[in-house]
Length: 257
Image (cartoon, rainbow, N blue to C red; front, side, top):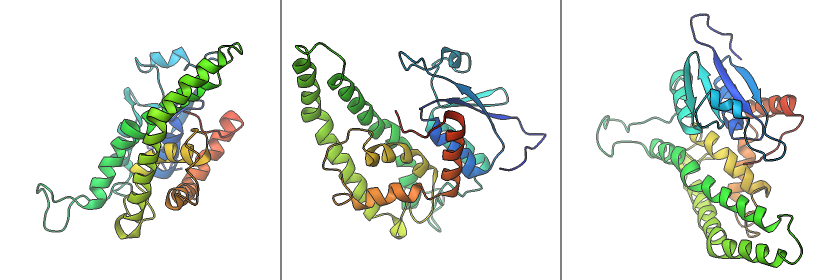
């Protein structure tokens, strides 16, 4: 990690256990910038975020960072902001094709993919995974045995009518995107890691680990590129450092929405 610049405001990651703040911790390690971590715990009964987070940001959610007096929330916004200031272009693909600077449609495919997946992650994929989580919670809810067929039936209808077909579509889409990545990948935007890959790491690892209750059809055999992509992300030294820090903070590393 780089030493702090005395003229630069302090970066603080407000860390909520089992949250998407994991990606921001990885980002900070990848950018090699000095930062501090302030920990917050979830309510052991409700699993809701520590209400003290609302003193940092009105929504009281993670991830959130402070840079001096400035507060930044939302994973993609934080990733873009820190990458712009500290990435030196490393996490953002080249924007313009040669000779087409500033022209409509002059962007490189890698850059357009980068901007797309920065938004797709939370806008499309994570919302589906969260519905699947709710669906599973309904199915496994501790209810009287005579109510169990009702809750199981509700969960089954959600799966059949919404989550299962959408998972099939999204996972095939990602498999195809990896197959056609610029310069053969192995990342979504080409041969080098980008902020979009950091954003996509959370739902990708949730899905390929089985934690998201994804359809049984998602296997290494059916989606080899998606699984290989997840494995590639975990090979990053900065990712490994982030995992070590999470284990030091929480005693374990766990993927959980």
